[in-house]
Length: 173
Ligand code: PNS
Image 1 (cartoon, rainbow, N blue to C red):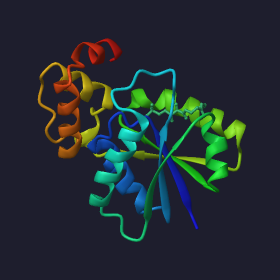
Image 2 (image 1 turned 90 degrees about the horizontal axis):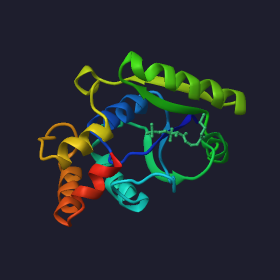
Image 3 (image 1 turned 180 degrees about the vertical axis):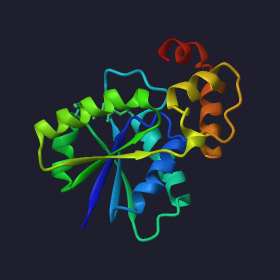
């Protein structure tokens, strides 16, 4: 049984994240998409909203025999991964600029927990410039994000802005 954790903020999930999950599903029997519950951050969506959005879009992934589940975690990723009896951590790499930070995290996680491997997957070129941060910024400023996030996520972002959160979001991005 090969179980991987795909950790992240997912604030919100983008089509780039979905692409990585689909690629990972070819390699693992189970992928746990794990949302970091970080009280220091000022997110657009609460952890429960992010989990709900993931639950809405994950069924659209063509995941063959891989089971894909959603969870959240607090504290150290490696402790969470061991508790879940995972063998690996999956991270997506878009461009060489991601690599330095990702390598640092992977090596630190390996030092903390040598039983876990980090597996880097390259996103499709179409998503190599997509990030949750840019999507939030573009959308909050009135730009078009079609094709960058699932439609259901766009609807949820629209609802947030309609509730008068524009200034709050711009300050947090
Ligand atoms: O989507 P993100 O924000 O790039 O994800 C970063 C994440 C959640 C993978 C990273 O911040 C993390 O693992 N946080 C948990 C705390 C931890 O284990 N820190 C040590 C990492 S070396």
